[in-house]
Length: 508
Image (cartoon, rainbow, N blue to C red; front, side):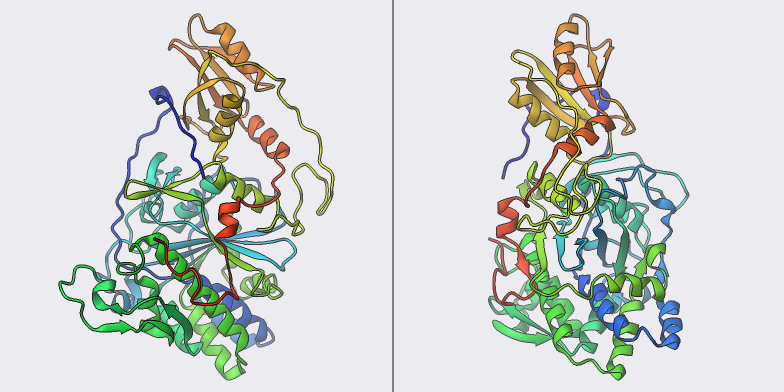
């Protein structure tokens, strides 16, 4: 994998404030399975009107007024994208399971973007590491005001925006849409209690440990190993023990969050396998549905039993082998995680085009085509070949489409230009690409403009040439892209829900 490099930083005019936020974390959990298992449960009880009322009373919704006004196009794919957030909030008795102060700030400990393909037979869950350095767009605070864009900020800081015990799921959704360029159709937040109770009601989950695990592997501040929590090998866990399993980080592999993500993916896969294999009687179904819905905070689009059932119907034909788990392309950046480009953009472009992990068309609309499954695309304007030899240019993303500056920089570099840097523009509402140039740079600016059909030129007082990308370029780039598969490094590391629970459990 490679990440776009720069020779010198771009001019300060377009830079945003914001730095890295450490985002203190104490608990880890993984609750993706709650939603998917709830789908199985609700489907089997869809005829019970009294159950609808009970489940309706359990479900909480968050205020969608905090969602961005500048969101990706809703019609770019027939597939659905569901954001699944595991919250470490200690409110409502969760402190008894996860420890800590019940009034502490709510944080996101684990996040998946689940893409349900348009054929409703495939699904791909993309893990986003909590330490990933991302751009957090403007988000609404509890007093109604909005923050400024923050660059190079830890991903889990989005959920903590506003510093409330309940967290800020709308801000996390804004950030994921900014990162992926995909529209999130639904967001679901799950807490500690629901996770623990679900595993109890399901009868336990089979997991595998690569080694013995002691108390200090869960709490590295302990000065002694403490008691044995898990023996090496395969075992069944539930309740508090299941929560401990998915929170373990230190003492296994390299002790990283990346390694923990691998084990969490294996856990969710095992839970799905367990639920599908069990003969759940009506007596068992109600506690399972009750446990799940009591622990959900959802967007208004899923805020009732009817709406949850409708979504559940879209998942019922997805089998275990076609349910895949991957992690967003990444590399270490000091103690943090950098999202690697263009690999990440290629992954998300494949999802937008409803291409499976092996490149198959799973029924979505191809870019530029008029109908699902069409084999043709509409031609789009392309730039004439230019020679950028000896011309330096800085590139700014003036849209909400993630990775656009990196994509344009790669194109310019291939044509001989020297790209001095990429960054997010001061505003992200540009419709037309703008070429800015200083005194004596008009000839160079015209050459750069030739690489961006439809762009306009503007003289500025500062030196150098800059490109501020507009939505017109984003649309052209999207239409001309023809993703066939996710990057090979991502595909090679994918886990299927039917994989052996002992396979690929650590990183490092």
